[in-house]
Amino acid sequence: MRTPLHPFQPDPGDGCPGWLEVRRLGRVGYREGLRLQRELHAEVLRARNTETPRGFLLLLEHDPPVVTVSRRPGAAGNLIATDAAFAERGIQIEETDRGGDVTYHGPGQLVAYPIIDLNLVRIRIHGWIRLLEQVVIDALASFDCPATRDPGATGVWVGRTVDDADASGGRKIAAIGVRVSRWITMHGLAVNVDPDLGNFETIVPCGLAGRPVTSIARELGAAPAAIPDLAQVTAAVEAGFARHLSHPEPFRDRTTDPGA
Image (cartoon, rainbow, N blue to C red; front, side, top):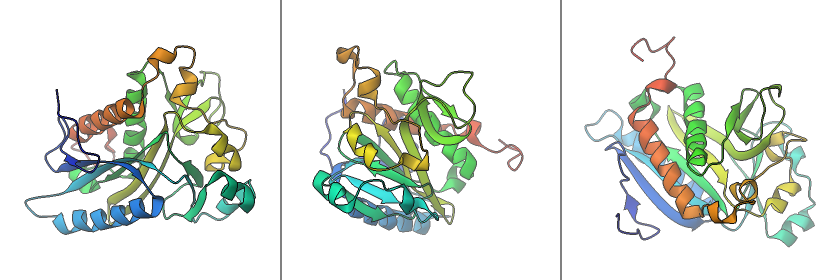
């Protein structure tokens, strides 16, 4: 059995690629997390084309809770609550440089920020998004919470049926939003383990009106003993990254990478 980690202790992870360093950070403010991502992005870039490439996976919760607003035109229009209502709930508002729209982060939600040189794994942006989705789908499956993709909306969903049209049906259980600069990734994914779902009512999550948000706790609520805690979900997500970054071939674009 692995010795429990101090929350800030780097963790190489079981089966992770040798260049990947995993850090379990506990609860972190949004600005602090963004600053760290930028610092590590620079480290990964400096290590490119050396004998010691670098990559990082940050696993954390954001506290205080925060709504992040992308630079996409119209994204700010998906803030529903008043400034006073956000303040009453203790929710900060921050601009972000990732893709996507508006997203909520807070306690009870696992956030994963992989800082990865895509050249190391020979993946491009579309494949990277699919890898992130698969990490979550695999993690949820390990807790008997089946989930799928929606071809019309990035993220991970539960409750969709074969009859649902693209970009319709189901409940969103994980959001994905990334930034890729010089082929190095930032930002990543957020899995709702057991957050305050009421806080999502302050926004139109990801700009998708009429599509509800859910959590692992809500989906497994009929069997409370089966609900995993955040540490268990963290371990499952970490294992998924280790597995898929070690074997990224399914996520490569065969039209541009004949060796995939």
